[in-house]
Image 1: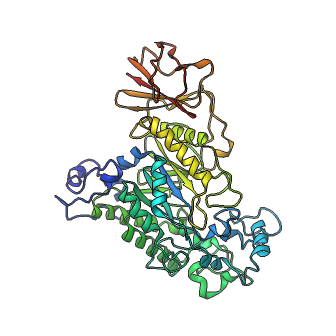
Image 2: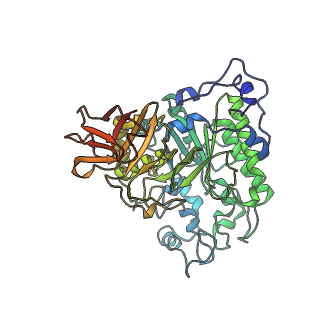
Image 3: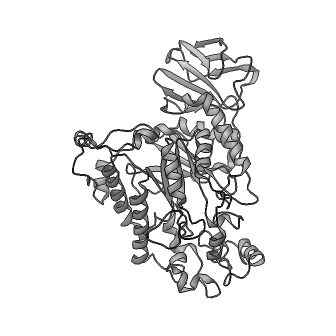
Length: 510
């Protein structure tokens, strides 16, 4: 990590400031300080010594992967293992009543797979074979999509580890695929220059499964999958389970050395308050020991389970209303209705996802875009096509995205976006009058979210009295553009042919 103020001098002897996937993987072997325990397990120490790594902010676009035993039933969502045990209104996604009667997934499971006492979630694991999984094919696809980092789910709420675990028998090497899924992806990704991270959702495993005698979830021989919690849904997280969470997380850190560690919700509850600074200090110190800057992504943006300035915040299926000077990230899925593969998966369009990427980057954020592979390890064709369309757009326009900074304003135009967690559902399609800005050196990129009406656009934010433009060109076009600038803004006539199918980038030289 980088240290603030006087500590910076010491730390530059420890490791290099790394700006890309390949560089971030290099280990520092010269002038390495013996003190790699800078961070103490308290917020004062972490705030003092932590700074968001520049390399993360430069990457802009990553891939998330939700793949696990829940992909076998391929029904409803990755929360199938929770919902299949929801037989009453008092056990819902938020632990509060919503409606009377059993959950629809509970009824579906009983009809298709049988009684939850005799066929529980554990019985999907031997069916989860991943027989067509090919890490090299996945990584090649993600690179073609223009992604710079990849974060597979390592531990989901279900308790099944997608890696070679030293702390649980419920892992992908000993069961199911009988392969180190995370390890294979890490090797392929790093060999091909990608930054590799892992996500941990395990904290919620404590309360994920409903415990009733007519389910297999109360069988003590499966307590290491379904958690050791009793049948009281209000039972606080035990010290023993917190130790299990710690052991699993440290095992993941030590053995895979992820560049990014992404945490889901529930780690934010008071029960885990003592664990949060402890794991942050442990991981950041490990990063120093490895000679690289590492990142924690945390979803608990609203109430700062990790105080501001100690992690990089993440918003699920939502955005910010404007520029945040500290780096941040949106995580969302190609699927409108699920993160894991389901038979009724509904994909977003490449156009809407490219617009999301642009809007987020203009506000100093990154986009982490999720794919949901099938149980056999194949990525569905519609998801592949969307990723390749995004990659084609980035091939032409990536210089307006990668390694850019936010400008003096994020954008202009009539279309507003929903902000905060789970706000994307109400967003409207952008128009040709909606423009977003990024900058790099003496270049400002004015990105039009759609082709403007009448083949002409007025960029109101670029006034001659404030930002004198010397040249204008459209990325992906060889045509010389006609343009003029005054205190009303910059007027540009579009080229005779579009440079692509989605958003269009004007490069302005100041």
